[in-house]
Length: 313
Image (cartoon, rainbow, N blue to C red; front, side, top):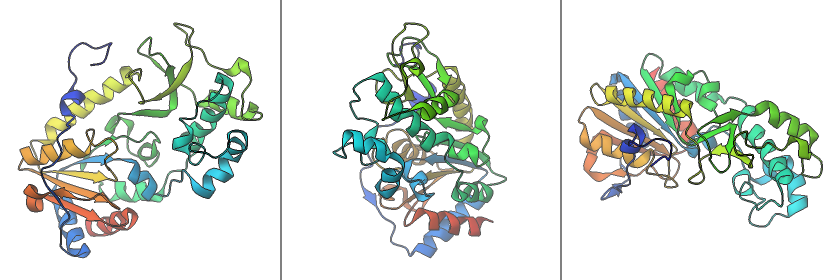
């Protein structure tokens, strides 16, 4: 329960923690699965997209390996590679010694994974294929790629936050703050992994430390924009259960399955008008009891999206 809102929210009611009784991977050849999925999309009036980290990876976003060494090598030199400094995600959990070091890393990470990340052709390909559909995006990604690709912000609910906003780390008040300009100043002033002390942000209410507006603990702030997006999602969800609807799940695994994966399965079980299409490189299994109403396509997602786009065009 959010400490600033007493009643249970639409999103909380949508969430689901129930695991399917039995998962199966459809046995039909890849081309047949693509044909079936494309036919279901063409027949649908409404498409609810559910995008996880696998979508960003399929689109070419890089987080570790050589990319991390090239972009974040200065931090590896300071802190060593160890269990943290091997990719952007893991590095965010490093126990930085002070606020100057914390923001030295996070300002660069936020820009690299967010504001400075070029829009990918794959996101544009997908949106072009779905042109003409009533469309909404539910996503756990914080990179803003769908907005950059042209999906209006009014059709996006990014439940886990964004790389361009900060909040009180203690969550003392329900407000977040746009921080891209500050991140750029930090990035330009960083020396030996640290930013100048006068650039360290402080909470304007309690005077405590600020942090990223990313859901990591109970202090995550759901501000007025978050609740407005949730309300739009709720209205769209009401439309989904009434008309011909496809739930198109993109790269969602089992890291936070209760946000997209399990709720999508529950909606499909409960409503005959809904079809579930699950695209994943390695976790495309679908509940056995849904039959052809659930199509899991386990393959390279960039290929699957491109092939669906051709069939839906």
